[in-house]
Image 1 (cartoon, one colour):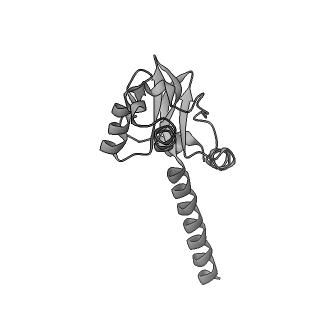
Image 2 (image 1 turned 90 degrees about the vertical axis):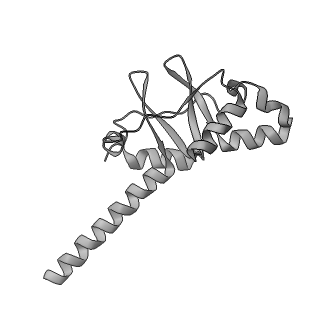
Length: 142
């Protein structure tokens, strides 16, 4: 299964912010939307990712004054991205190996999706449950 299949049918817009957005505004977006991260855009390109971790680490290091600075100064950059053709298991392995939880999906330089490790784990659990059910049905019919 590819990332393209995983994100197809999503009808909601990708929540993002610009590099000049203040950290305070970006944190407000995370809180309002109840999300853990958002892609940071520079024009039409993904410049980085701003996450809860970025906010917490910079707040601890620099104090509350950092909230009024631009998100480009605290975001994780450059963003690691995948294409829609990337396999779900490949993306999951990448996220596990690199120890991050959000992954922009880029096609031809354009952001087309944003997946979390939760999205990928849910797919994997659903797949395992489906395989287990098929095995139970097979055993019962034998």
